[in-house]
Structures are given as structure tokens and as C-alpha cells.
Image 1 (cartoon, rainbow, N blue to C red):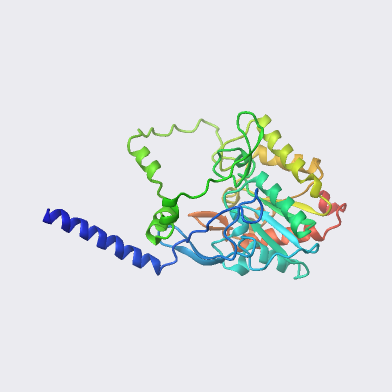
Image 2: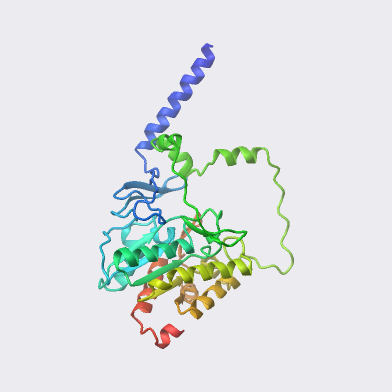
Length: 355
């Protein structure tokens, strides 16, 4: 009993020491996601200050602040027809960067400060979630011009169960629209959020106890070698949609944004930056099909792949935060912002838009 009690007390002392140490380090804090401003738009808790960092060694530590609507933004959102809404997922949040390097601030600078840019990004969201934010910005904030930063996984992630749905998705079997909100946090989860050690394990180490237990009793099969002539890279970071599902996602997106298209709606489509950095030409048939269909529906589309290819033709500087994080870095956002500002300034029917 003496040995057992010594072991228990020693373990508790170690856990307490870890908790106290992590409380003074920038461990990612609880964001308390909820539908604070609209029943279909989950956001962080409004007027929240919290820490954010990447990985076990707490890289890229930042202090995040949310505005009165729960978006990570340095400015308040007030009704303003002159404003531009920048919409997307964690690419728009850009939590790993200092505020001046984030896309909203860079787009505002590229517009010479003539127009405020509202950063309306939500991590873990996808294409149909963006349509709801377009509706919200138009109805509540009188915004007419939108820039939607399309990440390569946004199309297939619009299917329910993808793990990247904030609220709006399509049922994978029936392709019917569905609302898939996260359930409220349980009492145990709310209690664990108060612990820096628990947040470190969940947010920095990304350990899921249920998944960990499952892998302990699961046999791992070696991957089969690629077939001769198969492409060296995946076309996108996720599964391919069937033609019917692809059509359904795009049709649902266009239908939902249609009532709010009384100004500019610009789709800024990301590319496979890692393939381009290696001198390879990415092959993504669904990405190309998405852009073609969006243009056919009357949407303004900017394909940034030629811009990135031009960059890598003269520079070895990466466009990502690091090998451990494929999110765009400050330089990449500058290219995004310049392209968006040029497209917004161009005549709608001019040759630049047509290209």
C-alpha cells in the first residue's frame, strides 16, 4: 500500500506540475463554438481572447481576438455596403500568422485602404457553409461584394460526415440538404476545457482516446505500391466525388447564393502549391470542372495556379507555413490579395475578367 500510495501521489504531483507549467505557455485555448449570431452559422464566442499554437512544441503562438460576432477579426463588423466580405475556412482565419499578415488585412492593404475587409473565416467549414455566410453578410451587414477563398477540399468536404462541416451539407446517400450542427459540449468536456493539460493533449498532440484505443487492437496492413503510370500526387487532399454528388454540391451552392448576387462575388481558387514548388503540373479534373461550371453560372473566378507557377519559376521561397502545416504563409496571402484586388478593380465585362 505504501508503494501504491507513493506512486499515486507522485503521478498526481507530476500532473499538477504539468498543469501549472502549461498554464503559463501559449496552449491553444477553448473557443466555445456556438450559434451566437445566426442559427446556421457557428462562430467562436464573441469578444473572446484566447491563445493559439501549432504542434507539441507550440509553434506560431498567437493571441487571437474575436469581434462582437465571433469571427477572428481585428475590426468590428458594422453594416457597410462599401465593405468586402472575405469568406472561407481556416485559410481565412490564418490563426498562425500575426494580424498584419492575415488575408483580410493584406486584401485591405491591396485595396489601398479604400474599403474595409471583413474576415469571416471559420475553421472546419466548407462550400455550403460559405453560402450561409454570404447570406448573413448580405442581410445583416448590407455587403454586396464577396471574396470566397476556395480551398481544394471545399467541394468534397461539403458532404455530411466529412469532418469539415460547420452546419450545412448534403447527405452522401440521398444528396438531400441537411443541417449538421455540433452538439453542445457535455459537462465533462466543459470541465476539461478549463485544464491546460487537457487542452494540450487534445489541441497540440491531437490525441483522441477513442481512436487511440481502436488502433491498439487494429491490424495495420502495408500500403500496396502504386500502379505503373499512376500519378505521383493526389489531385486533392481528399476523396473524389461521384459526378452526381459533384453536380449536387455545386448546384446547391449556386442556388443558395443566387438571391445575394447584386454585387461582385469572386471565387479565389487555391492550387496544389507543393506540386508547383516541385516543378510538377497538378492534375485535378474536379478543380478544373468546378471553375468551368462556376464561370458558366456567371460567377467571377480567379485561378491562382498561374500566379503560383510564375512565383516558383523565379523563387525558391515556400508559399506554406512549413512542412508540418500546409496553410498559406504571409507571402502566399500577398499573392492572393493582389489577385483579388485586381479582379475587384477590373471592369466586370473586361478582358481581364473574361480570362
